Image (cartoon, rainbow, N blue to C red):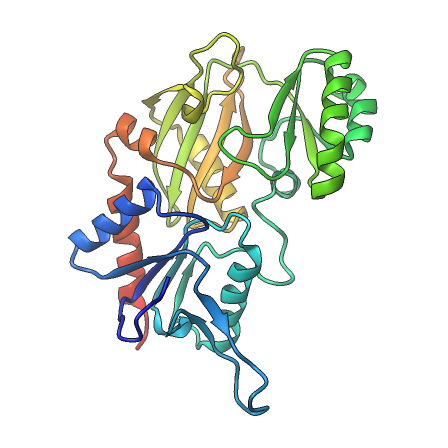
Length: 316
């Protein structure tokens, strides 16, 4: 992707692979409000150093210095953590406060990886939020302790993942043993860790969208297949709008704040027997097509308004 040096968009939305439907509808919503926006992946990122020792380094997206944008929204990062961290640290170190607004950057140097489920469970527990019983450790460790500490059924999930991927339900020790044998190579080769969590019986879960420290709304997702334990809409779950109690809103806002996200999808499961809430995770790039259809909330336009508001707050 070659960006023209004459390009003067002030809002930049970064994505990891391709411009999906969710990106396009945000782009259209911003343009509908009379603002220019640039969608870009991380491929055009470039810099050059070593020419003059006294010349400060500059980081470019194509031919645009990243400092020229007023708002940069890290919509998705995927595996582009190196490039995304370059951008976030460059802006932190080279722009004066308030001159560029960064929305949901990847984790800056020296800060924890907040998108990882393991860190989230640790941080939520520390903050006193209700979380399911969770064990973190090597797969071999999980194989040894899950039966005694959690019992069965239990959920095994990779610490990094989304949309219900890399999540497994085991009904007994034999199933856990087979699953661990299947995943061991992945754990060793990719360096990805897993969690074990108690299975909370439920009649669906809540997906709550938070934007700019406000709750946009919530849906209840209900699985439709008898052989499926996940409620994700992307896996065939049915979604409908629900009204949250003040307590659940407080949990969602606290969780998004801990994860340091302006736009977040907070997942809460209500235990079937007593509606006791359990906070399972916060997603940093939630899908919202099903949410919008179920609630009637124009999420893309809400995001557009939020980004434009941030742009207008930037000091020239």
